[in-house]
Length: 344
Image (cartoon, rainbow, N blue to C red; front, side, top):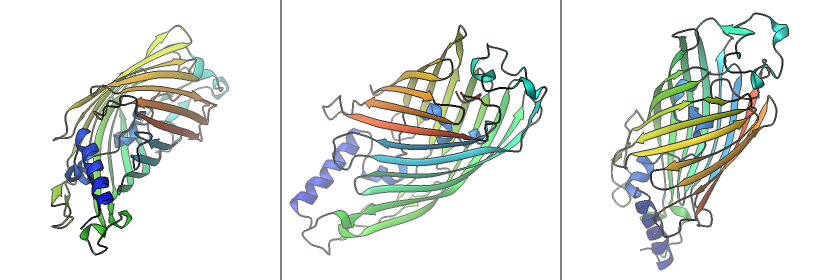
Protein backbone atom coordinates (compact mmCIF):
# COMPACT_ATOMS: atom_id res chain seq x y z
CA UNK A 1 0.00 0.00 0.00
CA UNK A 2 1.34 3.42 -0.91
CA UNK A 3 2.13 5.94 1.79
CA UNK A 4 0.30 9.25 2.00
CA UNK A 5 2.94 11.22 0.07
CA UNK A 6 2.90 8.72 -2.79
CA UNK A 7 -0.89 8.73 -2.97
CA UNK A 8 -0.85 12.53 -3.14
CA UNK A 9 1.82 12.44 -5.86
CA UNK A 10 -0.18 10.06 -8.05
CA UNK A 11 -3.41 11.95 -7.47
CA UNK A 12 -1.71 15.22 -8.38
CA UNK A 13 -0.55 13.88 -11.74
CA UNK A 14 -3.88 12.21 -12.46
CA UNK A 15 -5.65 15.53 -11.82
CA UNK A 16 -3.23 17.44 -14.04
CA UNK A 17 -3.55 14.91 -16.86
CA UNK A 18 -7.34 14.81 -16.64
CA UNK A 19 -7.62 18.60 -16.64
CA UNK A 20 -5.43 18.78 -19.71
CA UNK A 21 -7.50 16.28 -21.68
CA UNK A 22 -5.78 13.03 -20.75
CA UNK A 23 -5.62 10.42 -18.05
CA UNK A 24 -3.29 7.63 -17.00
CA UNK A 25 -4.87 5.33 -19.59
CA UNK A 26 -4.14 7.79 -22.39
CA UNK A 27 -0.69 8.88 -21.34
CA UNK A 28 1.37 6.13 -22.97
CA UNK A 29 -0.67 5.48 -26.07
CA UNK A 30 -2.35 8.74 -26.94
CA UNK A 31 -0.38 11.77 -25.84
CA UNK A 32 2.25 12.91 -28.32
CA UNK A 33 4.76 15.57 -27.22
CA UNK A 34 3.55 19.12 -27.69
CA UNK A 35 5.59 21.68 -29.63
CA UNK A 36 5.17 25.43 -30.01
CA UNK A 37 7.62 26.03 -32.87
CA UNK A 38 6.63 23.12 -35.11
CA UNK A 39 6.29 25.58 -38.02
CA UNK A 40 10.09 25.81 -37.97
CA UNK A 41 10.39 22.02 -38.03
CA UNK A 42 7.32 20.40 -39.55
CA UNK A 43 9.45 17.29 -39.93
CA UNK A 44 8.31 16.49 -36.36
CA UNK A 45 4.75 16.00 -37.61
CA UNK A 46 5.17 14.93 -41.21
CA UNK A 47 7.90 12.69 -42.74
CA UNK A 48 7.14 14.08 -46.22
CA UNK A 49 9.34 17.06 -45.23
CA UNK A 50 12.41 14.80 -45.42
CA UNK A 51 15.02 16.31 -47.75
CA UNK A 52 12.97 19.38 -48.68
CA UNK A 53 15.95 21.78 -48.65
CA UNK A 54 19.23 21.63 -50.53
CA UNK A 55 21.37 21.00 -47.44
CA UNK A 56 21.57 18.81 -44.34
CA UNK A 57 19.01 20.28 -41.92
CA UNK A 58 19.85 19.64 -38.24
CA UNK A 59 17.68 20.84 -35.38
CA UNK A 60 18.11 20.40 -31.64
CA UNK A 61 15.47 21.46 -29.14
CA UNK A 62 14.67 21.53 -25.45
CA UNK A 63 11.19 22.20 -24.10
CA UNK A 64 9.94 22.45 -20.54
CA UNK A 65 6.24 22.89 -19.77
CA UNK A 66 4.38 24.26 -16.76
CA UNK A 67 7.39 25.98 -15.22
CA UNK A 68 7.45 25.69 -11.44
CA UNK A 69 5.50 22.41 -11.21
CA UNK A 70 7.49 19.42 -9.98
CA UNK A 71 7.74 16.64 -12.55
CA UNK A 72 6.34 18.82 -15.34
CA UNK A 73 6.79 17.64 -18.96
CA UNK A 74 10.20 18.02 -20.58
CA UNK A 75 11.05 17.18 -24.18
CA UNK A 76 14.38 16.87 -26.00
CA UNK A 77 14.84 16.06 -29.65
CA UNK A 78 17.40 15.93 -32.44
CA UNK A 79 16.25 15.79 -36.07
CA UNK A 80 18.34 15.54 -39.23
CA UNK A 81 17.32 15.16 -42.86
CA UNK A 82 18.76 15.86 -46.29
CA UNK A 83 18.13 15.27 -49.96
CA UNK A 84 20.10 12.58 -51.77
CA UNK A 85 22.24 14.28 -54.38
CA UNK A 86 21.39 17.67 -55.88
CA UNK A 87 18.54 18.32 -58.26
CA UNK A 88 19.55 21.91 -59.01
CA UNK A 89 21.30 23.11 -62.15
CA UNK A 90 23.25 26.32 -61.71
CA UNK A 91 22.85 28.51 -64.79
CA UNK A 92 25.60 30.91 -63.77
CA UNK A 93 27.44 30.04 -60.55
CA UNK A 94 29.13 33.47 -60.45
CA UNK A 95 25.71 35.06 -59.84
CA UNK A 96 25.13 33.05 -56.66
CA UNK A 97 26.35 34.82 -53.54
CA UNK A 98 25.40 34.80 -49.87
CA UNK A 99 22.80 37.55 -50.26
CA UNK A 100 21.05 36.42 -53.42
CA UNK A 101 18.28 34.49 -51.71
CA UNK A 102 18.08 36.42 -48.45
CA UNK A 103 17.23 39.73 -50.14
CA UNK A 104 15.88 38.79 -53.55
CA UNK A 105 12.50 40.41 -54.43
CA UNK A 106 9.49 38.25 -55.00
CA UNK A 107 9.83 36.19 -58.17
CA UNK A 108 13.61 36.69 -58.43
CA UNK A 109 14.74 33.94 -56.10
CA UNK A 110 15.48 31.34 -58.78
CA UNK A 111 17.18 33.54 -61.40
CA UNK A 112 20.54 31.85 -60.91
CA UNK A 113 19.35 28.27 -60.85
CA UNK A 114 16.30 26.09 -61.36
CA UNK A 115 15.10 22.72 -60.15
CA UNK A 116 15.03 20.21 -62.95
CA UNK A 117 14.13 16.78 -61.59
CA UNK A 118 12.54 14.86 -58.69
CA UNK A 119 14.67 13.85 -55.74
CA UNK A 120 14.81 11.55 -52.70
CA UNK A 121 15.29 12.51 -49.07
CA UNK A 122 16.37 10.59 -45.97
CA UNK A 123 16.37 11.57 -42.31
CA UNK A 124 16.08 10.54 -38.70
CA UNK A 125 14.95 11.69 -35.28
CA UNK A 126 15.77 10.92 -31.66
CA UNK A 127 13.28 12.16 -29.06
CA UNK A 128 12.84 11.87 -25.31
CA UNK A 129 9.70 13.08 -23.55
CA UNK A 130 9.02 12.80 -19.82
CA UNK A 131 6.23 13.75 -17.43
CA UNK A 132 6.58 12.72 -13.80
CA UNK A 133 7.41 9.00 -13.62
CA UNK A 134 6.32 8.41 -17.24
CA UNK A 135 8.59 8.75 -20.27
CA UNK A 136 8.76 8.04 -23.99
CA UNK A 137 11.93 7.61 -26.05
CA UNK A 138 11.81 7.34 -29.84
CA UNK A 139 14.31 6.57 -32.59
CA UNK A 140 12.91 6.94 -36.11
CA UNK A 141 14.21 6.93 -39.69
CA UNK A 142 12.36 8.56 -42.59
CA UNK A 143 12.25 8.64 -46.38
CA UNK A 144 10.49 10.97 -48.83
CA UNK A 145 10.21 11.36 -52.58
CA UNK A 146 9.71 14.83 -54.09
CA UNK A 147 8.23 15.34 -57.58
CA UNK A 148 7.53 18.41 -59.69
CA UNK A 149 3.91 19.18 -60.49
CA UNK A 150 4.84 22.44 -62.22
CA UNK A 151 8.24 24.19 -62.46
CA UNK A 152 7.39 25.95 -59.17
CA UNK A 153 5.08 23.54 -57.31
CA UNK A 154 6.30 20.26 -55.81
CA UNK A 155 4.62 17.35 -54.07
CA UNK A 156 6.31 14.95 -51.68
CA UNK A 157 5.24 11.78 -49.93
CA UNK A 158 7.07 10.32 -46.98
CA UNK A 159 7.11 7.51 -44.45
CA UNK A 160 8.92 7.06 -41.16
CA UNK A 161 9.49 3.96 -39.06
CA UNK A 162 11.31 3.18 -35.86
CA UNK A 163 10.77 2.20 -32.25
CA UNK A 164 9.19 3.84 -29.23
CA UNK A 165 10.08 2.86 -25.69
CA UNK A 166 7.46 3.62 -23.05
CA UNK A 167 8.48 3.55 -19.39
CA UNK A 168 6.83 3.96 -16.00
CA UNK A 169 9.46 4.35 -13.27
CA UNK A 170 7.64 3.08 -10.20
CA UNK A 171 10.98 2.72 -8.40
CA UNK A 172 11.09 6.52 -8.09
CA UNK A 173 8.02 6.47 -5.83
CA UNK A 174 8.44 6.35 -2.05
CA UNK A 175 6.24 3.49 -0.96
CA UNK A 176 5.38 2.29 2.52
CA UNK A 177 5.47 -1.27 1.20
CA UNK A 178 8.53 -1.85 -1.05
CA UNK A 179 6.81 -4.95 -2.45
CA UNK A 180 3.91 -2.90 -3.75
CA UNK A 181 3.33 -3.54 -7.47
CA UNK A 182 3.57 0.20 -8.06
CA UNK A 183 7.28 0.02 -7.16
CA UNK A 184 8.11 -1.90 -10.33
CA UNK A 185 9.71 -0.25 -13.36
CA UNK A 186 7.73 -1.10 -16.48
CA UNK A 187 9.27 -0.69 -19.94
CA UNK A 188 7.55 -1.52 -23.24
CA UNK A 189 9.05 -1.22 -26.73
CA UNK A 190 6.73 -0.84 -29.71
CA UNK A 191 7.10 -0.03 -33.43
CA UNK A 192 6.43 3.53 -34.55
CA UNK A 193 5.16 4.24 -38.08
CA UNK A 194 4.01 7.53 -39.65
CA UNK A 195 3.26 8.86 -43.13
CA UNK A 196 2.41 12.12 -44.84
CA UNK A 197 1.99 14.25 -47.98
CA UNK A 198 3.37 17.75 -48.55
CA UNK A 199 2.51 20.24 -51.33
CA UNK A 200 4.83 23.24 -51.52
CA UNK A 201 6.31 26.12 -53.49
CA UNK A 202 8.33 29.21 -52.60
CA UNK A 203 5.16 31.04 -51.45
CA UNK A 204 3.05 28.35 -49.73
CA UNK A 205 2.89 24.88 -48.27
CA UNK A 206 0.11 22.50 -47.22
CA UNK A 207 0.40 19.05 -45.75
CA UNK A 208 -1.32 16.17 -44.01
CA UNK A 209 0.30 13.61 -41.76
CA UNK A 210 -0.62 10.67 -39.55
CA UNK A 211 1.38 9.14 -36.70
CA UNK A 212 1.11 5.92 -34.67
CA UNK A 213 -0.08 3.94 -37.68
CA UNK A 214 0.99 0.67 -36.08
CA UNK A 215 -1.98 0.70 -33.70
CA UNK A 216 -0.09 -0.98 -30.85
CA UNK A 217 -1.77 -2.39 -27.76
CA UNK A 218 -0.29 -1.68 -24.33
CA UNK A 219 -0.74 -4.02 -21.37
CA UNK A 220 0.78 -2.84 -18.09
CA UNK A 221 -0.72 -5.59 -15.96
CA UNK A 222 -3.81 -6.00 -13.81
CA UNK A 223 -2.52 -3.77 -11.01
CA UNK A 224 -1.41 -0.87 -13.15
CA UNK A 225 -2.80 -0.01 -16.57
CA UNK A 226 -4.95 -2.36 -18.58
CA UNK A 227 -4.73 -2.97 -22.31
CA UNK A 228 -4.95 0.28 -24.23
CA UNK A 229 -4.53 0.69 -28.00
CA UNK A 230 -2.43 3.53 -29.37
CA UNK A 231 -4.47 6.25 -31.00
CA UNK A 232 -3.58 7.66 -34.39
CA UNK A 233 -2.83 11.37 -34.55
CA UNK A 234 -3.88 13.28 -37.68
CA UNK A 235 -2.27 16.61 -38.58
CA UNK A 236 -3.15 19.11 -41.32
CA UNK A 237 -1.28 22.37 -41.83
CA UNK A 238 -1.19 25.22 -44.32
CA UNK A 239 0.88 28.41 -44.62
CA UNK A 240 1.34 31.27 -47.07
CA UNK A 241 4.12 33.85 -47.44
CA UNK A 242 3.15 37.49 -48.07
CA UNK A 243 5.80 40.05 -49.01
CA UNK A 244 5.45 43.64 -47.77
CA UNK A 245 8.12 45.58 -49.60
CA UNK A 246 11.67 44.30 -49.95
CA UNK A 247 12.34 43.66 -46.25
CA UNK A 248 9.20 42.44 -44.47
CA UNK A 249 7.51 39.06 -44.91
CA UNK A 250 4.34 37.86 -43.18
CA UNK A 251 3.76 34.12 -42.76
CA UNK A 252 0.34 33.13 -41.36
CA UNK A 253 -0.24 29.42 -40.81
CA UNK A 254 -2.72 27.01 -39.25
CA UNK A 255 -2.49 23.53 -37.79
CA UNK A 256 -5.41 21.18 -37.15
CA UNK A 257 -4.98 18.07 -34.97
CA UNK A 258 -7.30 15.13 -34.40
CA UNK A 259 -6.48 12.41 -31.84
CA UNK A 260 -9.74 10.93 -30.53
CA UNK A 261 -10.84 10.79 -27.73
CA UNK A 262 -8.94 14.02 -27.16
CA UNK A 263 -10.80 17.11 -28.45
CA UNK A 264 -10.15 18.50 -31.92
CA UNK A 265 -7.68 21.38 -31.74
CA UNK A 266 -6.60 24.26 -33.97
CA UNK A 267 -3.53 26.48 -33.83
CA UNK A 268 -3.41 29.90 -35.51
CA UNK A 269 0.07 31.32 -36.08
CA UNK A 270 1.66 34.45 -37.49
CA UNK A 271 5.38 35.11 -38.00
CA UNK A 272 6.86 38.40 -39.24
CA UNK A 273 10.33 38.25 -40.81
CA UNK A 274 12.64 41.19 -41.45
CA UNK A 275 15.16 40.84 -44.27
CA UNK A 276 14.89 37.04 -43.83
CA UNK A 277 17.23 37.40 -40.86
CA UNK A 278 15.22 38.15 -37.71
CA UNK A 279 11.60 37.35 -36.89
CA UNK A 280 8.91 37.47 -34.22
CA UNK A 281 5.47 35.92 -33.98
CA UNK A 282 2.67 34.51 -31.90
CA UNK A 283 0.24 31.58 -31.83
CA UNK A 284 -3.20 31.00 -30.38
CA UNK A 285 -4.61 27.59 -29.53
CA UNK A 286 -8.31 26.87 -29.16
CA UNK A 287 -7.83 26.00 -25.48
CA UNK A 288 -6.85 29.68 -24.97
CA UNK A 289 -3.09 29.15 -24.90
CA UNK A 290 -1.05 32.11 -26.14
CA UNK A 291 2.49 31.61 -27.47
CA UNK A 292 5.09 34.29 -28.17
CA UNK A 293 8.09 33.47 -30.40
CA UNK A 294 11.22 35.11 -31.76
CA UNK A 295 14.29 34.01 -33.65
CA UNK A 296 17.34 35.00 -35.65
CA UNK A 297 19.27 33.52 -38.55
CA UNK A 298 22.78 34.15 -37.26
CA UNK A 299 24.35 33.34 -40.62
CA UNK A 300 23.85 30.86 -43.45
CA UNK A 301 24.66 27.94 -41.13
CA UNK A 302 23.06 28.69 -37.73
CA UNK A 303 19.75 29.95 -36.42
CA UNK A 304 18.30 30.22 -32.93
CA UNK A 305 14.72 30.65 -31.73
CA UNK A 306 12.75 30.79 -28.48
CA UNK A 307 9.08 30.59 -27.53
CA UNK A 308 7.11 31.17 -24.33
CA UNK A 309 3.65 29.69 -23.74
CA UNK A 310 1.04 31.19 -21.45
CA UNK A 311 -1.15 28.17 -20.78
CA UNK A 312 -4.75 28.04 -19.73
CA UNK A 313 -4.41 24.60 -18.14
CA UNK A 314 -7.60 24.82 -16.09
CA UNK A 315 -5.63 24.62 -12.87
CA UNK A 316 -6.52 28.20 -12.04
CA UNK A 317 -3.12 29.55 -13.11
CA UNK A 318 -3.27 31.19 -16.51
CA UNK A 319 0.32 32.41 -16.13
CA UNK A 320 1.91 28.94 -15.93
CA UNK A 321 4.53 29.13 -18.66
CA UNK A 322 6.38 26.78 -20.99
CA UNK A 323 9.75 27.45 -22.61
CA UNK A 324 11.09 26.04 -25.87
CA UNK A 325 14.47 26.64 -27.54
CA UNK A 326 15.56 25.44 -30.99
CA UNK A 327 19.06 25.54 -32.46
CA UNK A 328 19.14 24.98 -36.21
CA UNK A 329 22.22 24.05 -38.24
CA UNK A 330 22.35 24.03 -42.05
CA UNK A 331 25.30 21.94 -43.23
CA UNK A 332 26.56 22.06 -46.82
CA UNK A 333 24.42 25.13 -47.50
CA UNK A 334 26.19 25.71 -50.79
CA UNK A 335 23.94 28.55 -52.01
CA UNK A 336 24.45 30.60 -48.85
CA UNK A 337 20.70 30.82 -48.07
CA UNK A 338 20.07 32.58 -44.77
CA UNK A 339 16.35 31.78 -44.57
CA UNK A 340 15.18 28.31 -45.73
CA UNK A 341 13.72 28.45 -49.22
CA UNK A 342 10.78 26.11 -48.59
CA UNK A 343 10.32 25.96 -44.80
CA UNK A 344 10.66 29.61 -43.80
